[in-house]
Length: 429
Image (cartoon, rainbow, N blue to C red):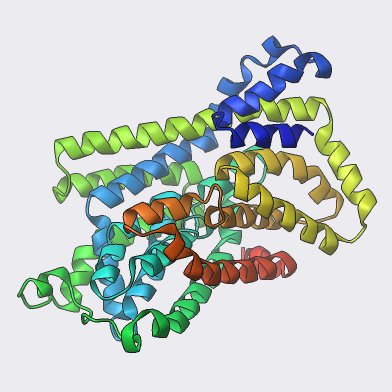
């Protein structure tokens, strides 16, 4: 009943954070909760050190996009993919994976790739609808390839190691990238005349009449951008940085590279900081207000009741995971990603422990489910961002999105029922 009321508020347009807090205020007397006792909770929640990684990774994404580093990553991808048939689609997949290894945000990845690789794809003969569908789908790699903002949220609120969550999401992310590349290779025969791009793979300078730069020159120019994911992930997995410290190092590094290469003017930097602040404020406001809702749920012992109900329905963990997958996909269709993670993580965590399911494994399953919601209306943020970035119509995108959605669901089934795909790191670390 509570979740239904919450979904109803969200569907009528009530801001996400307000909807979570409003449910508690309206039911405070029924639940015998003093609202004033929860007054300091939002501030205490967003003061969590781990959450500082969110604005820092968002800053890195803005600097990458506006500072020209994304174009350098795309040029490197072009070097390795140019001899493959229909290379620009594979470049979209590879560049999105690299972008995801830096920003941790699906929507940010879609926006950055749509404004760079998406433009090139349309120039090479791909329809706007297919380009936007691939762009929206590969945006999932922004979260599945670590670091990942939803995984940071899950780890912080459930009390699971964020570093372990990042390690656990590597294989699912790589699998998704491979599946998307296979689907693109299959569809390219349909979306391109003869399955061949109309313009040969070349750099922007070559198209303007200049000789394309050598591979060595492209790699040297892109080296600062390529070092960023190595710095972030290498620092985390070697134990030198925590995830939050790695985000801070990445932010300073990206800012220094942007300033030294003069890729952004003073007005650009101001816009970068403004966008980062606004996006961070929106996410942290949701986190702050959902903390009130989550505390109320705990006080009412609703997670424990759900856990007892789930174990009463079935004693089989595999059946439980199937039911949870269905529920999470539906939740992802109607709720914003971060809000859904903050709601469903604490609610399901007790049941997960009761079934003996690894909470790290479940965290990747949960986030993957909810991220798939970015491709399924009515929320479907990735679809809307890709539509705008590629000047496409939603109706032209749907026929292609279903292929990539099917691929994502296949990967979800694999990681759900083959836990070793997420817990592999325990055999090596």
